[in-house]
Amino acid sequence: MKFKSLFRYFIFCCFCFLGICVGIIIDVQMHYIQNIHTVHEISIIPKADVIMILGASVKSDGDPSDALKDRLLTGIELLHVQLAPILYLTGDDGGYHQDEISVMKQFVLHQGVTSTAIRIDGEGYRTYESCKHLKEQGMHSAIIVTQRFHIARAVYICNTLGLQASGVIADRQTYVRILYFWVRDLVASIKAWIDLYMYAPISPK
Image (cartoon, rainbow, N blue to C red):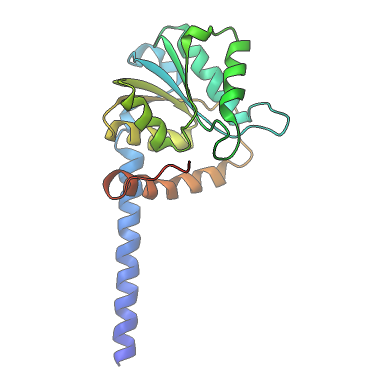
């Protein structure tokens, strides 16, 4: 009898924990959903201090991955219509995993963006750090450019840290591992909530 009671209590705790996790995921994914746009909605995207392009992996030959290339092209498009004067490239400078920043910078320069319109954050190892560093530099607003699976969490983090952030979806193609990316990012929503409200993450460096 005692075992049955303990088992029921364990099941109850599991359901409570699952419910809390689901609630956090919904909050992170839906809280600032009205701040997320596509490039087809340029007329309603608010202007900002910077267009922030979040880093992603690079290929073994040194080219940006499909996701990163789409982010860069979308950011350049927003820069050309003058939604912000600065293209803010944030990601890994090689100090943690791989050098995303050099690839990103060279790509936008080859696309005709002038060096004066580029600002670099080479220690944006996580989305949290990218938003935090931008705020610490005295910026007040940002247009965040990333994929649909990542955009809600990125906007949520930046707004919670005190930036006026809107997001622009950079999906210009179908990605091979899209299901994996969605599942990973939904789980990462829980980590983002903990980072913001419980324990701020420590930089990998």
